[in-house]
Image (spheres, rainbow, N blue to C red):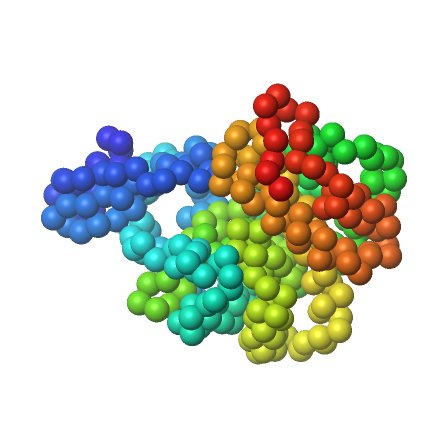
Length: 342
């Protein structure tokens, strides 16, 4: 706290009157809303120097290209703390929340969604243009190692905890093919990695971007899948298709779009993203017992049910496991006292 107070005093020339810890989520980073005579800012204390460096470099790239990310005002000498622009309370997820259960979105809410996905290609291509990928955390790109981490996240931090019986060799065979297919992408495009409604702020009616420190070079389909198939928002198939169309119109300004080829890639990348997301729900929810993540598990199983309604021919055993998981698992786990209400 002392370092944040010092940064505030150094930037504004006056002491902060208040410093309130903001609600924690899945990250170990801590954010504080600091206010005083000089104004209100967000103070961040990170836990990993490389992650902080990645955020600061990416933030500068966003801002240089006119994409609204929080302006950074001051950084501590060790790079572990900084002050950034306060984008307010308008987190897109919270603004959508009243309509998420039944999908009864107002025109204003739909406009926010359309504006967000329509800005995504600009984020992917402009941030990626000439960026030094070596600064990215934990790795420079969406590569074989990163895909393996995501697939194993699902297997070890979710699937095995359910107690569902499966053939690990057959599953790995499909994982190997899925990894190979997922890496078939070209170009220096930025993959936000966790592009979802909780990481979008609406300020003065416009989308602003936060929490992109895990970004790296990667396929454009990944971020769209992250946003539209996120279990926390669970958009209807009709709304997803509407927003996919808006995204493709915006993408066409940056590269020619072959819709059939795009949707083939998009479907398999959606599978990769959902597996990673489910691993996070397992670790943060089943292991760490965070209710926010536990609550998403029934919905992500529904996503698997929908996605595998048309089986993946290249990954037949993975398809079978996901269908069994969505249809047979009763919510019991191998962890003492932990059962999911499905």
